[in-house]
Image (cartoon, rainbow, N blue to C red):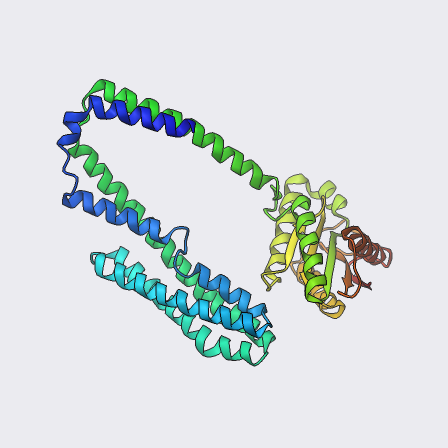
Length: 379
């Protein structure tokens, strides 16, 4: 309400004081049309990638769907999204002038998008209809994900180029339009400054909200965020009658590492471990969070105890293979992990604290047995 009032007041005074200047501006001129074209393009594709992001989300839904009715609905929805994308592509292909912007929009972004739809129609749909969910998920990871990311990169370039061209055009327009009335300049600055102050407050508030859910050092979700996701995944596991695994990961003798190498290298060690963990997580639903100082926790939807144990061993071995020196560790001369895994099944209703306690118990057993190992519990 305050921003609207400021804009209304500012524009009324602006119109009164600068009427003669404004009437000299050619509204529908060539420069004006070029600026509007660029702004329309950015508005059409934001947020990146504006064209097939919904198609990608539908694909993610479809790869996990087993209900035949919903499968057909999603397939139909994807077909409509493809139709809309092709129509939009044809519009911008005809409107954009030749150059880098058009090449990125009409070629670089279009090719992976159409390959994405082709793989979806000719490969993913048959797998889904035949009930081969695992192969469908593999196809999603191996083919559709890269095509989606390639398309997204091209769209990002479109947005960047469009913004750059708009800025250049607006700079030219600014030189043409001579705002030499002192009161008009003061008024514009006053309105802009007030709006910026409000916007900065809004942006800071949003940043604070985001910071409250993510760990500042490693960039992964924090315990607060984890608590919310765990409740959701427990409910989903019970609803879909699927197993749910939880993994607590501890860096062995991390205190000794900090004491030996210092806190700066200690922080760097945490970042390296997180990057290795994330690199080995292939499913979009796997949720990694920082649980405490040197502890991490991992939610694995639709994962059995065997699958959890296998992944845990892979994570442990991957960190050990990094060969990060830890000369004062009591179990190895490099940085290692101790991991506790617990799996619950849908027929048993569990509280979050029950799962965490069981995983922590498995972790404790790994430490008791000498660390640098994995132990699994099943509820």
